[in-house]
Amino acid sequence: MSIKLFDNGGNIAAPGAINADPILASGLELAVAVAGNDYTQDVVAGARYAITVPIDDGTYLFSVTGVTSTAANREWIAVEGETIIIKIPANKTTLYFESDTTGVAHMRRLN
Image (cartoon, rainbow, N blue to C red):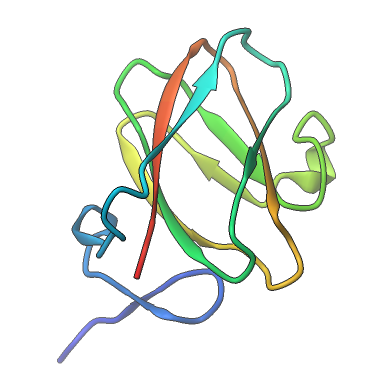
């Protein structure tokens, strides 16, 4: 018996998001200076990203449809101590995010 994990685009993901295959030198910091404020990060359309939220850096909300202060726009949620893998849709180049605390999440593009 084998278990396969998939990202939101239906692609097979590494067994455990921390084992993801990053593109070298692709790391980004998603810094939140003011809790609850909306922030943006440029992303590559169609790319997959792993996002890690360190312990004590709160809960992060992510969207490609618009600001995360609008509940309907929250496509992904990552809690502290968790790594998630997301796939950016082909026609989107902006990732919107916010956190309930100040902190930094770490994002890297995957092969």
